Amino acid sequence: MNLNKPKEGTIEKIVGLVIVLVVILVVVIVKNGFNGGNAKIDVIRVATGGGKEAFMADEDVSKLMRKKYRIEV
Image (cartoon, rainbow, N blue to C red):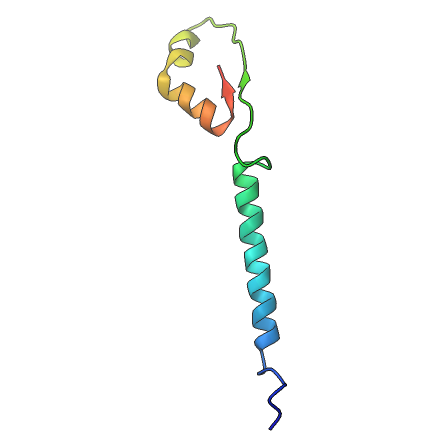
């Protein structure tokens, strides 16, 4: 009986766990942005007309644009 030899499948489990952790880390970084989610919000000026004024002035639309796309309209 050799006590120094790892059980069969242990290496594969460790490699699989490392791969899962790396994937989770990449997803978190991509979702939050590469700078930790504190990116500068860009301001965009919109030429309105044809009924877009109410849409652009809607607070829910502004929150969505700010949160998801990091722009201020």
